Image (cartoon, rainbow, N blue to C red; front, side, top):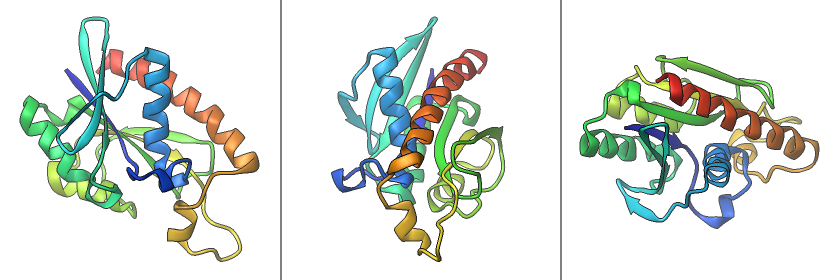
Length: 175
């Protein structure tokens, strides 16, 4: 069994915001792999599908971004998962918009959701960071990450989300 966790905030008002890129990736994956987020447990909306013979759980924590670690910890305990069975998808202001990076291990950096996961399960898990860029014109960082994605940025991120879904499916086969 493998677990994909997309980070975001659960309320409708956060739909289509930069900070919800993780949720957007999970929704696109659900569309491609034809599953629904029909269950709720471990503080998350959960869907599942099989890739080859491996069950893949897909989670969108309902804990809000900054407390995502409690959901990750609940999954880890409930299903006796190792950290290398858990892959987290998250937005990253330190990467240019439309880029993404995969690595295993590291700190939570400046991202409160990632820091909370690291606090709860440790740092040795795979993560895929999706660049959202930094705010322009001195906009407050919190306002930026919670703002709606519009215009050219929406087109760029829509394309990268499609790429990331394919990347994740390939990566899951390797895990």
